[in-house]
Image (cartoon, rainbow, N blue to C red; front, side, top):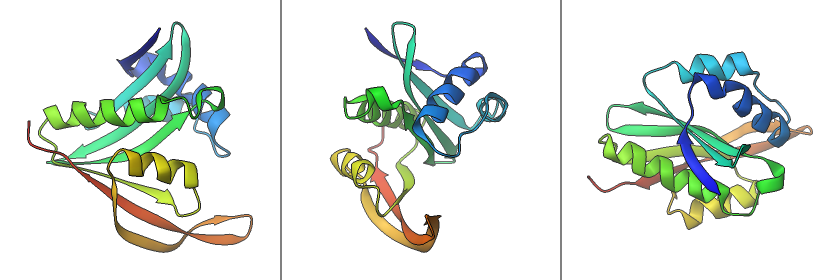
Length: 150
């Protein structure tokens, strides 16, 4: 049974495990633990029984928040876990008075862009040549989701 739970310091190793499987430059458990201690961080973890599937980290600043990281284990990708995380964190931060949620994504990351589009994010800017992958410069798209007041 899939469950969305708050990610706490005790979950840092699980977040590191997911991140290692999902990215090429993973953080370690200590890096996640340091983030999870911050009072401005909203962190959610999706579990299927005892198996971690994905997580999201968002940082709140006044009435805005930014998705710092979202990661889904490759075996759980394209199965609704990312959308579940985005919807859940948006509800959580909205209840804390946040009216806008931001994130950035590489322009060439078509699966992530499709997810963000489905969730209602709109493009509000661009950072030229922000990422470099395999010697190629890639723009970062800045996206925003308007949240209604609770």
